[in-house]
Image 1 (spheres, one colour):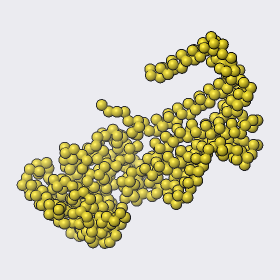
Image 2 (tube, rainbow over the protein chains, first blue to last red; image 1 turned 90 degrees about the vertical axis):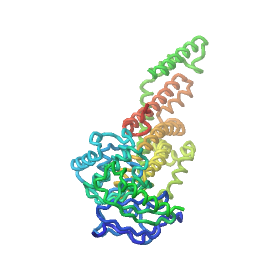
Image 3 (tube, rainbow over the protein chains, first blue to last red; image 1 turned 180 degrees about the horizontal axis):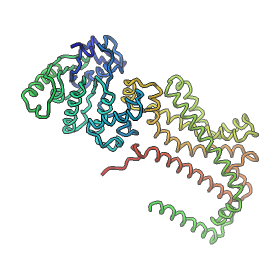
Length: 246
Length: 257
C-alpha cells in the first residue's frame, strides 16, 4: 500500500538554537495507528506540527502522496473556546469551511454523540469535567470527517479511568472512520494499547531510534491489557526507550 | 439584604448632619444642611438639569468615541507590529501629559466659539488610552493552540480576529470601559473648569459659579449630581459586563463546593 505521508530527512531547529528534530524519516500508511513515544523534549510535538503544516522544516520534506488530506488535531489541553457552547466548539472547523448552519449543527451534534456527549450540546466548557472537555475536543477534531488525526498527548492530564475510557472510544472511532492516527504520548502502556506501530524517539536532537510494528489494534478491549501480547509489546517499547535514554 | 446596610448608614449620617447643623448653628456658607441642599436642588432644578445634560452629553460622546477609536487602533496594532511600534509611544505621551496642561492649548486651537468640540477632545484624550492598551493586550492574548487550529483549517486573518481574538479581548475591553467611563466624566469636568466662565455650561461650571457666589448649598447639589452621574455610568457598564460574560467567564464563576 502506498504511504499516506512521508517525512524524509526532516530537520528542525528553533531560534533559540535547540535542535528539535534531526533527519527524521517516517512513512505512515493509510489506516495505521502510529504512536510517537519518547521522553519530554524529544521533539514529538514538533514532528506533529510539521506534519500538520503549522511549521516548516529547515531541511527535508513532508510529502502527502495523494495531496494533503483533511486533518483533525487534538492538543494536550482541550483548548476549547470558553465563550462557546460544546456544539459551537465542535462546529468550529465546519464553520470555517463555510458549511451552512443547519447542516453544521447536525454534523457537530453527531460528532458529540459519538464521543458520548449527546446531552451536553448546550453546555459551556466550564460546566464540563476535564474528561468531557477533552471529549468535546475530540468531537471537534472528527467533526469535519478528517482522514488523518494528529493527537499531541491528548489524555496526559486525565485520571487513569477517564484515560482508559477515552482510549477505547478513540479505537472505536479509528476503526469506524478508517482513520489514520498519529498519536504522541509518553506513556508506554497507552502506546502499546492503542497502536499498530510505535516510533520511539530520543531527545536532543530528536531522532527516531526504533520503529516497532505491533498487531492491528482492531477489536482491542480492556481485557487486552491482561494478554501476553500486551506484556510483550510494553517490554519491547520499554527496552527501546531504555537503550535510548542514558 | 446586604445593600440595605450602606443605605441605612447613609440615612443615619444625613440625619446627624442635619441635626449638627441646627444644634451648632453652623452658617450655611460653611456647611449647609441636607434639607437646604435639597431646597437648592429643587430651586435650581431647570438650570441644574440642563447643566447635567451638557456634561452627560460630552461624557457619553467622548466615551463612545474612545471605545470606537481605541478598539479600531487596537485592531490595527494587533495586525501590524510596525504600526504599533511607530504609534504606541505617542499614545503613551498623550496619556501621561496631564489633561489640565494640554487643555489651554486645545481650547485656543479649537476656539471658544466651538467649546463643545474642545471639551469633547479633552474628555476623549483621557478616556481613550485604557481602551487602547487593554484591548491591544486582549487581542494578543488569544490561545496559541486555538490560533494554530484555525490556521490548520485555513482560517483567514479576519476569521481569526472575529472568531478568536475579539471574544478573547472582550473581558479586557469591558474592564477598560469601566475605567474609561469614569475617566471620560473626569475629563469633561476638568475641561470645563479650564474653559472657565461664560462658555461652558456643564455641572463643573455650575460648581465654580456657585462657589464664587458662596452658594454652598447649590455647590453641593451640583456635586451630588456629578456623583450620581459617575455612579450611573459605573453601574450601567457593570451591568453590560455581567450580561456579556456571566455565562462563560471565570470572573462570574461561582465557587463550587
